[in-house]
Every structure is written in structure tokens, then in C-alpha cells.
Amino acid sequence: MELALDLARIQFAATAIFHFMFVPMSIGIGLIMALTETRYYRTKDPKLEGAARMWVKILAAVFTVGVVSGLAMEFAFGANWAEYSRFVGSIFGAPLAAEALLAFFMESVFLGILIFGRNKVSRKFYLVSAWLTFLGSAFSALWILIANSWMQTPAGAYVDANGVARLNDLLAAAFNPSLGARYFHTVLAVMVVGAFIAMAISAYYMLKKKHPEFAISTMKMGAVVGAIATCFLLVSAHSSAVVVAEEQPTKFALMNGMYETGPADLHLIGIVDEANRDTLALSIPGGASFLASGSFDTSYKGINDLEKDPQFNALNADALSVNLVFQSYHLMVALFGLIALIVILAIIFSFRGGKITEKKWLQRILVFSPIAPMLAIQSGWMTAEYGRQPWTVYPSVTGPENVHMLTERAVSGVVTDWEIIITLALFTVIYLFIFLAMLRVVFGFIKQGPVVSAADGGSAEAVAAVKAAQADAGSSSVKEGE
Image (cartoon, rainbow, N blue to C red; front, top):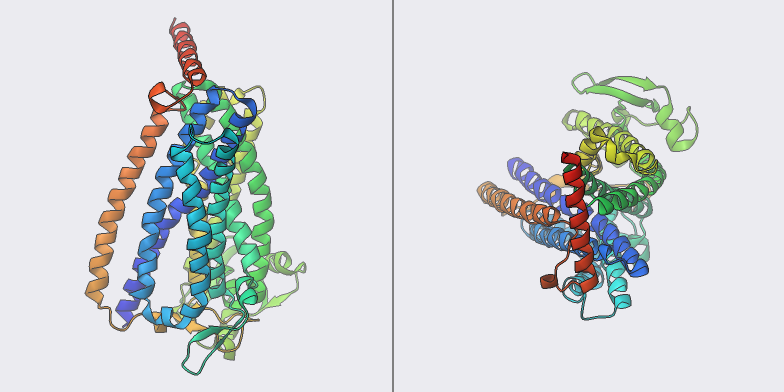
């Protein structure tokens, strides 16, 4: 059973990580696409038609892979995690059904209009469809996070005589204590991803000396979106940490490497010595307590005392991945600092007379910059999911009595080790193929650029504007060569 549990966790983690590479991209790119469509609608600039079309193509490719990769996670609930599904089935049924019926269908329908209906519906309805596609993806994330947040901070439920969690307050369950902070933190993070992808594509065109107008205008848009989202992300990150400190004391202790009870230090860099139950770090004494409560002297329980607490006595400090949670949390914080620095540089050089076109070193950094927010998101999810172990449904401080479930009891008792190994291998091969195919398609769209032709159904004005821009770019290249 222990091997089956480890394999089931590895498989679900692998599929979740792969799936959540595309969710941030689809929501983030959806915002950039909607903003571009808005500019095109307001200015009627034919040069923007090609840009709008390119973003729709990229969004469609990313959205498709995101949908396909998410299906495996749904099947895993009924296979590898059958006992978990029995426990939370009546709770999860509502948000997952709402996600499919109210959000996913909404996003899919309006994305279909964007792909096939540019010349078949009015310009105003097409613009509305662009924003509804983005809002549908954000709405979809809400329902998924309602389900995930309930696992972190259960509410509005009880456990019946058969040991199954049942709803008794739908609104309390949906708007559980951690939902607000976690949802806004997630949505802001994916907006940063979209902004960085926009800046990366713009920097690529600058390096290649292609599509100069698109490159500078999109760079400015990405920098502004990134700056706004990053500022608000700092606020949501603080709110999320406060919720963890109040509702999930064991996770708070793991994130800060706290074995002893007392004020929580703010560690800048360090390592957890799990064998000796100690943390070696460069720290600000009481700094984490100040951020969580406003006082450097606020005391929080350490792991040693938490494993003796009746509410958390399933905790086994020797079996915890304390250093993994500690490092993933601090990696996320460090990457946030890098993200903020990149955004500041992009803002400064984009709005200072377009000097970013002269900064090759910054352009090269920006081409690879989306890696930073993507890694930050993945390390944040690792902190959230590993941090609540050994529970898959966490016994939060304000949660209903007995509404919790150990991860070891959630795994199916009939799925064999070899069945999980085989499906994991198949998923790996299939996902790798899908990923490479998606990269080829998306890079093809980027290489083609924000152009439009008569064959694509583009307007005569847009086709003429593209040809004029290409002619200007060609003459500029000749002059540079001379």
C-alpha cells in the first residue's frame, strides 16, 4: 500500500504539473488577447488585425492542450484516489459540475467564435467574445480553486455515520476561509505569466528586427500588465500567508522550518537539518510573525509541539519533507523578487523613448523571462500541496470537527502498483508528444508573426498595411547593411 500511495502521488503530481503549465498560459494569454482586440476595435488600425489574429491562434493551441491534459486528473480521482472520491464526492460534485457547465462551456463557446467568427459576427460582438473567453477561463479557475481550497480549509460540511463528508452549507463550503486569498493570488500570478509571454515574444522580434511596431507596443502593454499584477500580487501573497498562519499551523511551521514554538523568524536563505530538527538560516528574528500578525513577538507552534497536539497528532516530524516545503516556499519568494526586477527594467526602458530596442542584453533576458513566473507558480503549488501533508483534506483550525482525511487512506485499495507504473509511463510518452507538438505549432505562429493575408480572411486594409510594413522593414534592413 505504501508503494501504491507513493506512485499515485507521483502520477497525480506529474499530471498536475503538466496541466498547470497551460492553465496560467491560457488565462494570461487570454488577457493579452482581449486587450489587443480592444485596441484594434477602438483604433480600427489595420496593423492590429494581424496581432489580434496571432494571439487568438496561440490561445487556441494552448487552451486545447490544457483541456486534454486536465482530463487525466479527473480520471485519477476515480481510479488511484477512489477512497478520496468516496469521502469528498458529495462536496466536489457541485463545484466541478459548475466548472464544466458554467465556465468551461462559456470559455469554449466564445473561443470558437474567436477562431471561426471574425468575419461572421459584428465587431462589437467579437470584442465581447474576446473578453468573455478570458472571463470564462478566470471563472473556471474559481470553481477549481473552490474545490482545492476546501481541501485546505474545509467548511460547511460534516461526516456522516458512513464516514463520508456531506454538505450542510453550500455557501460556507464554497466561500471557505482560504478561497479569497488563494483565488486572487492565483489569478494575479497567471496574469504575470501572460504579461511575460507578451514581453518575451516582443523581445524576440526586437532581436530578429521584425515587426517593430508590434514589438514595442506589445512590450509596453506586457510591462504595464506585469507591473500592475505584480504590485497586487504582493498584497495577495501577504493575505495568503496570513490565512496559512491562522488556519494551517503545520504548513506555516514547515514553510518557516519551525521545530520549536515561539516567534517565527523570517529566513532569507537557509537549509533545514531534518535529522537534528533544526534550521540553519540567515534570518530576521520574528520577521515572519510580524508579516503574519503585525507583531514581532507573536508566538506560533513549532513542529515538535504540533505533533503532540490532539488536532494534529497524525503528524510525524521524522516523516515530513520539511526541507522540501521550506525550499520551495523560499524559491517562490526569490522568484518573485526576480519577477519584480524584470518588470521594473521593462517599464524603465520601454517608456524611455523606446530605448529597450537598443538593449540586446535585456531583450535576451526577456525572451526567457516567462520561466520565472512559471517556476514561481509551480513552487507555490508544491508548497501548498506538500505543506498540508500528511492530510489530503486538512484539519484546519476553524474547520468542522472530524472533516479531514489522511492521504494514506485516500488511495484506492484495488489499483495495483504495476497498473500505476504503466499508466504513468503512458502519460509521460503521450504528454511529451503533445507538448512538443504544441511548441511546434505555437512557435510556428510566432515565426509567422502578427501578419494577415487575404487567404486568412483578412481585410484589404490589413493586408495592405502588412505589405507596407514589410516593405519598410526591408528597406531599413538594407540601409543598416550599407
